[in-house]
Length: 339
Image 1 (cartoon, one colour):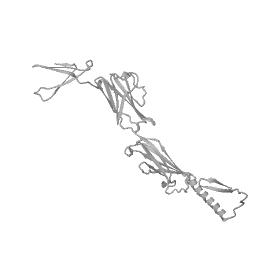
Image 2 (image 1 turned 90 degrees about the vertical axis):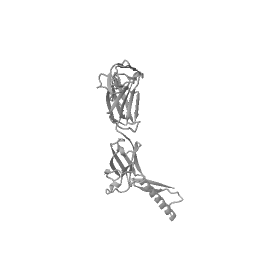
Image 3 (image 1 turned 135 degrees about the vertical axis):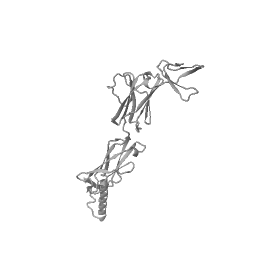
Image 4 (image 1 turned 180 degrees about the horizontal axis):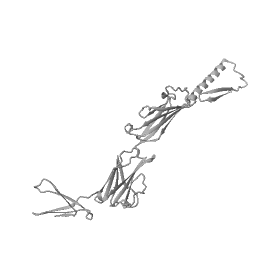
């Protein structure tokens, strides 16, 4: 009965000890057949030793940051561990390669070799532009080496637009009944699970300087901040609606202060906020007049009409001309009857 021990002495080779505990019947190797058997055992152990040595090769790839904004620099680090081939500093750029999703190799900026030549660390940078990104939001980088065949390290990254501070906004009040406000977001955000765009409002707040705001679109009419109940995002357009008879969120006349806040939950430090003020009396689009009645005689024309909001201050614009005139004349009136 024989026992075989393989004791590793370093990462790439090992010393083989063959211990034979012989039965009383067999005291020693006495034939060529036994010698051939011994050589076969040693050869088998050497093959196992080489396979074990090859398995020591390993690659790792790290990126900073892990969540990338378009136009932001990515720092990549690929490390090759414990390769068997003696490292030759000449032509070192071929020992570790870093490529990206379009199979383009990146330029290696630096190589670091440890003292015992068992580890090579490479560094590269890349900038993802809008034009180079495919429709999908997840991209990847790949680290490979001819010294470490059949092995690679891949890193998947999420790409997103950096939150952009909203600067353009406007509101329209229809007939003192409801108000629709719209803002241009500037970009289309890709990862809706990560990016939060909300609206908060406040109206008639005496002091706007000490209010905190977060990733919401809020409005204020009194002294509290309220989330916009009817918010919608289509492409780059953000809208918020205030409707008539909508409980606490009902439209009210006054000065509205809106907070438009955009935050990425994966990169909170990049959040942005904007503040807007709108006076509803300056934004009203009245409804059309109704029940128009015309009375004509030889000396005058009498016009009568009605409006759905008779108790608010209305200004009427009337354009008129006679059949003998080519140009229209314009008159403005602040009452609802003209003679």
